[in-house]
Image (cartoon, rainbow, N blue to C red; front, side, top):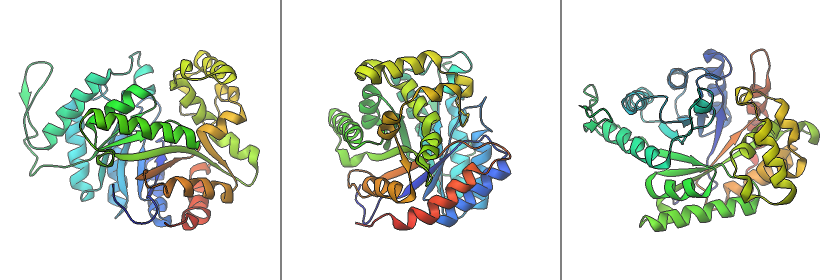
Length: 341
């Protein structure tokens, strides 16, 4: 995608706090300069996605509002299409659809992630319905969004942490969310997969918007900064195929898989997070002082291959100030200092 200056920066949020608090976070994020918010969709761990996004839409003016990310199977495609089209109408065109095959939202109800082919079918059906067309459902019945006054065009971004889904996403989505680490070699490898997948589908790499999703810990004390990202990096290692890693890193990923508590997936410091060593925190996240974080975020935002950076902070909980403090600190110390091209 063509652009001038640094890529926009979005903010990932978990609905572990009351909706009114989430609205406050959205307003603060807009105020300090974030381009978008991305709300996690995992129904047993967070408040309802579209209710929260709708509330945020009514309290903001320019902030883009994204599912970050939703999944097939927990909602029929007609439900997702109606929800996204409604959000697009309510927000004045600020909706984004982040989606993937599923993780905690499905595993916590005893279901496995969707197959890539099923994800593709689901996305196609949602798009069709939002375009004002009818769709034939798995039941054999046919339906359309009869309330829709005009087509609702919402960009679809598929989140991917592995090679197969990354390549497939590059062939069918408006964008790919790269959940594959923060180290330069990991980012390069992910972008190469997008290029391959786009080419396989007869598309150009530039046809596919690339969002790098990165976990961020921000503190003058390095150990505290590391602690802010341990839980999220452990989640990445839970999703990564251990066979893609070598030596001690593979052993860590295997240990995380064995010990991972999916019901603690939204905790700020679950027990399994202690298994992650600092070397992997540095590869799969950005954790450090404001100056160090600014330098690494700048490098990503000014990479012409990258169209958006989404930063995901430590998950907050009611009665704490983790999320609010992060938004304020990132807005004060990092966003104004991200170097422009």
